[in-house]
Length: 274
Ligand SMILES: Cc1cc2nc3c(=O)[nH]c(=O)nc-3n(C[C@H](O)[C@H](O)[C@H](O)COP(=O)(O)O)c2cc1C
Ligand code: SF4
Ligand code: SF4
Image (cartoon, rainbow, N blue to C red; front, top):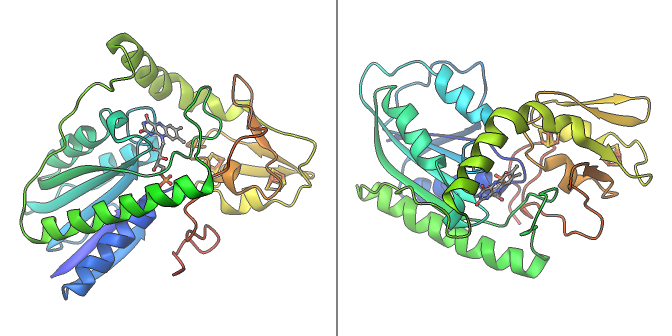
């Protein structure tokens, strides 16, 4: 069958997971097409199976993914869909999977499978730990995540139906959970782009501007300037060759690990086999 896969990624985790699914599907003889979400795609051609993979940001999906799902046209015939969410902690995926499921159901989708896959945390400017892990630990987490994705992809092909159930993260009180979710969704995204700064180590190479998936960085002179379309995906922070980027309001990054999925190449946005 024809399988269509869509993803959004900041640092390559969600791409690695959807690409792992692609491999499993192709090995089973299916024809697969993978692409990044794109706001101009209003009509996704009907396929035997459609799959999405997004990261979780503060217990919800990234704003760009929410907008994309909202703008996609309703399917004429019931469309089989699966959704995978990558999370820094599988206990802390919040509403991400259920939010996607609800939106897709309203588009005449038969949501056959939703799941959460733990991958390394990429939120280097988070105001509090946990921060991105060291390289060895990250590789272990990736290995487990890829193994889970292979298992899930086979289950989906076997016709297993599973739905991730929402639960409050054990580390959070309910009050704190809703506070963080609502603050990020309704205040954070509208304002956090203003808090980006660079240390003196920035040499104006403009790599951050070239790799930003939303084109949210402009070079003014030899300094990057962030704009309001920023999704807080952390690609610029983690790929800056001089580790120069930080955020005010608790987003200091000196001495912290940087993280991106080692096979992910944001320049061409297609995973290179490693
Ligand atoms: C702004 C931001 C918020 C995040 N919030 C959460 C969260 O609420 N729960 C969680 O488990 N991981 C959280 N993470 C971690 C990412 O979801 C995780 O590292 C994901 O796999 C990154 O995927 P990507 O590499 O495809 O961008 C957050 C990351 C960022 C940048
Ligand atoms: S990638 Fe880093 S060093 Fe290069 S311009 Fe951006 S912040 Fe400065
Ligand atoms: S500016 Fe940085 S954090 Fe914001 S969307 Fe672009 S790469 Fe991601």
